[in-house]
Image 1: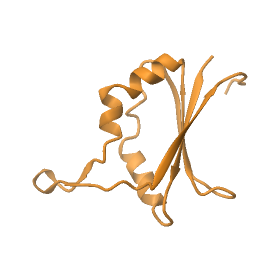
Image 2 (image 1 turned 90 degrees about the horizontal axis):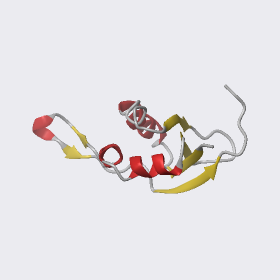
Image 3 (image 1 turned 90 degrees about the vertical axis):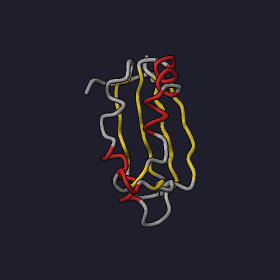
Length: 110
C-alpha cells in the first residue's frame, strides 16, 4: 500500500497567497518522479491555521529516493526573485513546518 506524507506548514497571517504562488510556480515538478502518486496543497479554513502539503507515494523507498535527490533540493531551496541580472534570494514564507507520515490502510477508488 501507499504512504502519505503531510507537510504541515506554519505561515504568518497574510503570507498564504505568497505560499500558494510559490507552489503554483513549481506545479508539476514532482509529478514525474518514480513512485509519485498524488499531490495536494490544502489551504486552512476553519479550526486550523497551517497549510498542509499532502503527497502520496507507492512506497517509503520512492519517497526517500525523491527526498534525497536533486529534484527535492531544487524545489525546496529558497529560490530567487528578479531577472538573471538582479537575482536576490527569496526569504522563506513559512515560520516552521513538521512532517506527518502515514501508511495507507484503506482507500476507495477515485
